[in-house]
Amino acid sequence: MRDNYYFERVRRNAGVEEFCEIIKTKKMKPLFDTTRKKIGIILLTLTLISDITFLLKGDKVFSNNSNQTQVLYYIIGFNLTLQTLIFVHIAFPSFIQENKNWLKENKVSFFIYSALVAGCFLLFIDYKSKNLESYEFWNNVLVEAHGMFFDIILFGIILTIYERFNDRYNEIRRLSDEIDDFRYWKSDEAKFRIRGNLYRLNKARVTNLDLAFIDLSKIELRKINLSKATCCETDFSNSNMENSEFSNIECSLTKFNGKDTCLLNANFKNSTFQNTEFIEAYLVNADFTEAHLSNINFGKANLRGVNFQNVYLYKPNFEGAEVSSDFFEKNPLWNINGYSIREDYRIVKIPESGQADNFRYFLKKAT
Image 1 (spheres, rainbow, N blue to C red):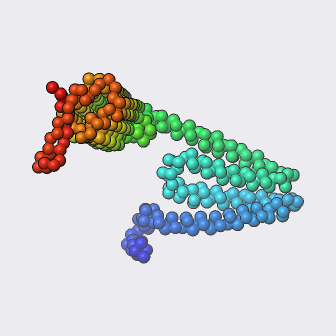
Image 2: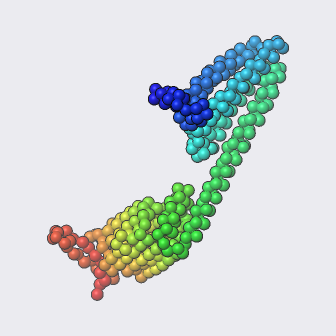
Image 3: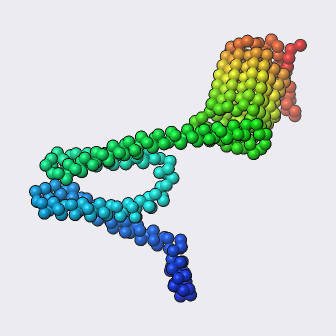
């Protein structure tokens, strides 16, 4: 009612040209959409009626009469015309507008559905042709239907799969090139651009990245996946990397320093660290199973709940590191190779401030 009142008021107060311009605006779009849907339903109904009539009666009524065969062609032409009107002028634009994101992201699924529909149509024609082998029209339709089916498979599904893989490769290459462009740039803008590219590459299931000489300090990297990555003089200091994946990573001269460096539940399985620092880092429940740790510095780090199962250690520094009360009891079970923590360090028990019954445990070098 409000729209009708508005247009009536405009029609009375404005000239014909202005009124026509207003009709072309988005104000009239809902009316046009409603009319389009009504026309689409009517045409679709007529098309379905003609389809059903043709499928049920066509082969019996028109097979032996040349005049009626010509009528059959008229019906088929009328049917195809109605379908074209529906999908080209009415249904197809609305479908594209409402499902454009789905079509962009699921091209393969779209063509698979199309192939299934074409396959069902093809089976129906094959079935009909068995009883109408002398009927030239069905034989021609059968040939065209098989060609259409293979066109959908070849140009639809196979080429779309190739296009998707090609687009994925180009996107990965572009993101990797951007990381290279910002590699030596020490600024907040470079950090956040690299961070965004890392998460996009993670979505593409790419983790074996070259992160040498990159500054990723003081940013959020929660749940980042850097497995099989390579880090050389990379700086992760004071960054939040909670629940992150670092398995099979290779690090040298890399820094994870700072009280704000959070590596809670981080996974370092089968990783290799050389001359790497975790000074004051929060490593609670981190997993270093079967890692190779050479000249690593855990000074004043929080190592409560850390797993060193089958770790190889060479010249580590645990001075001032906070550990669990049963750290030395777990040590023999871990089967640590190359170095004995128990021989060079002892546990110092310090009461928490204001809580005499609660203690914290730190490693100190044995004198």
